[in-house]
Length: 281
Image (cartoon, rainbow, N blue to C red; front, side, top):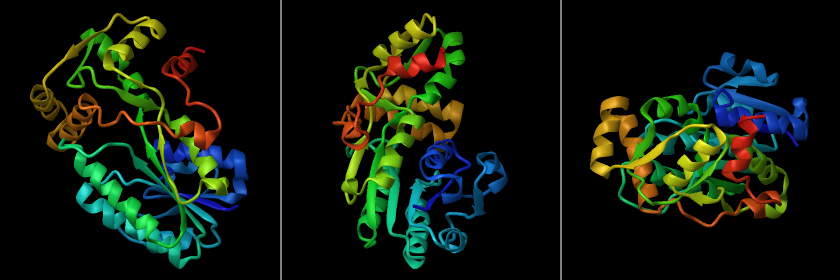
């Protein structure tokens, strides 16, 4: 199988590319990136391609059997059209299987819902494409919290508006393992899967940080209004709204969904302790 993975200059795309190289061989994997030089360390051929045009993808997908589309990081208003460019390029070049990395989330009214809704539209576009497909709905990555740990320690707390809501975290490597299965296992085709681990509260997350990273954090619950204001001050109106919306959805248990990870991979998703132990090897 020859596989093309988009946005391999990003962390999820790179993780999937590395796993694909192990599974299919370095000569059977290509990547696309808006800035190919940022992904040259992968050792595969990288095609210059921008989601705003299908042209680069038409070249990249020649002779390709399966495509993994990493969801665009662009404005939700533009994502649907960007994704359609990739879908059309795949159809025009004779790609057989199309894999899309979507996101979990029940319908709500948070400032994150525009992103969820744009992903749902792309899911429908993929299903309507006539290609064999599989959609993975990703849980929230745990890595950003780990990377922000020094700041949490300085503040002595994790503060957000999630309250007692539960969130099923995942990691980029766990997702990469699942996407390889979606690529190669035809029994999983034409379905949508929630790729998540066990759902935990923010208080439980703090407990895991304290146990595995020797921190002494506490959890501080804020109102959605307080947290949105704080985020917009510190991260700008757009990004701050996105982050605040994520935690409002956690608060409302809109990410607390049944996991399909074991169905896809053949084993249970790693727990947060198992993932955290990897950082301390």
